[in-house]
Length: 603
Image (cartoon, rainbow, N blue to C red):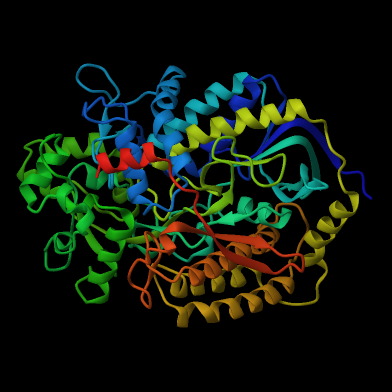
């Protein structure tokens, strides 16, 4: 076997976004050696795209808020298929994680008396999102990186992991390559934390960056871990739709939280037409009350634009399908209308939403202080991921932990905006803490040289084939079919053929030919990503077919209602001995009476 460069660390963190950085910081603070692998450059994490804020019941703006209300909102938003223990830990611990971030140097927007300012967001009963204008994720990454560099963490930038290495059932390392020069690397570790983010690049229209190809999901699945709730893919209601070159880029929910309204081509606020019964008591039925809510009136009800993301997305799709959409196939999001309410509206918008102002000015030549934006749903986040223990974040495989978007449980059928950033902090910390504990209790395992050599041969096969299949074309065709058939609105007649098509895509992926050499070769990188994209696409389609109901982010035309029995189960995806994908339903553990009481009190 070639003599590949080998690194040994107590804990290896794969992914350098919010969850990965927080895990690395916590593990290093526990006194173990830590390696941090990232697919692109440090600081380019997708966390920077989380613009609106960090959800935490600090009660700085509304004293009625507390962890119990936050927990209840999260469970209601997730349609009660959440892991209730994760939702509880998240709600309880998020305030401390935000204060900790502040102590490390995060610069938040402030209330008049100097406390962290919080804004309204969809699905949250009270103003709860700590924020830095509309650049919160960027500030989080800056703060975590600045703090992390003093912890003695070794960072391996522009490296991609191809497989996890096992000694028996235990995960003991990872095998990957340096993207710049194509050289293979072995990472031996006593514990591994997956923090690789999501799967958005399996879809044509997405807010996700190029790195989001389901790497952590696929690595864990191939190693023998279980994936849960993969049918629940969140489509953010507001992504850019024009010009085509920027289609899918996120338009933060903060626009609506600060007073933005959704209208169709007739100028009507269509969100008033469809308010779910479970949210009627909390939702304004007139424009004036909704505006007062956005301005901080604690007695006002929230505008319907701040309902959960799955509901708003479906309402937008309805307007477009019924011919009331905008000229480029979206609807209008208008914050400029507030000039009727505020004499200094332009300054207010630029101060509250600086990134959005510059984004539309530079990319679409639109001044959002004067004109409405065109927006439409964009693939944004997956609630499903690696099944983990709620307290330790360890998967069913000893030594393998997961946190952030590639882990699952906290969000159930639908994530509330802002919960992703506090999720990264709460469970990134826990993953790092318990990975370090595991590393202290275990020695380095033996790596399987045969496995390494097989993976290396498979990775290089694309250079040696005689075929002419283009990796970019395979990815494009996969994205098209996932967008069309396993998107916002689903049915069995469209999804079942997808499974057959995915087999075709696998054959095509196995026939991809790459020209050139291993150095600086993006075509090769794309070819290697195809395996992960195909795995997560199959998992999403299989789980979506298995859940024969509409719940949260899954809407089935052929099963438009909720099924009470299915509200008590999770879908579990695992790899069978013969390599096939298996899907089963498993009952959710009964919630304890004290948490049932909390939900009852906060309906």
